[in-house]
Image 1 (cartoon, rainbow, N blue to C red):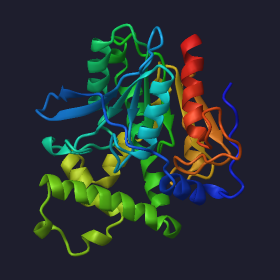
Image 2 (image 1 turned 60 degrees about the vertical axis):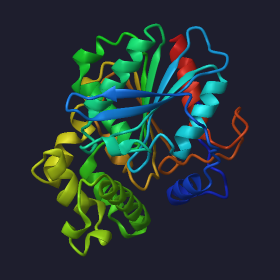
Image 3 (image 1 turned 90 degrees about the horizontal axis):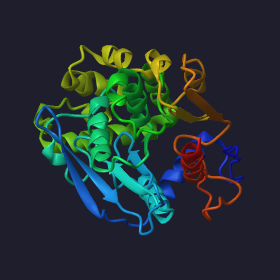
Image 4 (image 1 turned 180 degrees about the vertical axis):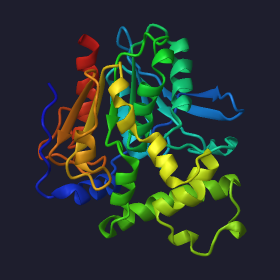
Length: 326
């Protein structure tokens, strides 16, 4: 069983949990042992960072980590987890979405919450290379949304991946409209600004939009306005509402056939707890709604068996170990 999360007394509430976890990242540099290039059907390419364990388990689990919005394979939580998992004998893939990471300029299209086929292509590539390794995809934040969509939209293709053992979604928006409204609140303006700044910088660097074509108000856009003006049209949706409605996992989680853990926090400033609890999940989905933890926070009162206070990391490790023997 996975232990319940008890927050550190100096980090009470979802806002502090979120901010402290981000600012106090404790992640050292962790260079990839190898990079895997995954060609996509539309001519774009994904770049996956691979780290091998020095002493692999037998069979060696293949843990596929997928970063959140505005992140990359260099995101602190992915680096931290990759180091811990490889020390425990597991092989780790750190996925870069289109445009993310140091090689992201090669992609000419954007990623969004409906880009589930990109993740599928990455999983198929690594499963073909390691056909005997149990496969564990883990999506964080928006990638948790993408992973849930993958599990519900591509059930037939996933049947051809017998290595897929279980999946985990962490702090994923289940209802995109409700999550965007939450981000738009005044107390979350710092999060709103971070997401828009990260996405805007990435698109300008890649030349997908030009600075001179942007309205003067663009630097002050909310994420909702950004999705209306940029994400929806570039991704082929009519508008923001069409995008949000088409890609919200709440419509598909009843169809999931892979054992899946949905981990969330009741005080997440980005993901309203009611949207997590009210979704009509299939019997293959286990929902773990912790009383606290914020958005990708989970700084705990007690040290974990890994020697730090990163309960989220410990939860991931425990879940993989349990899934291996079920």
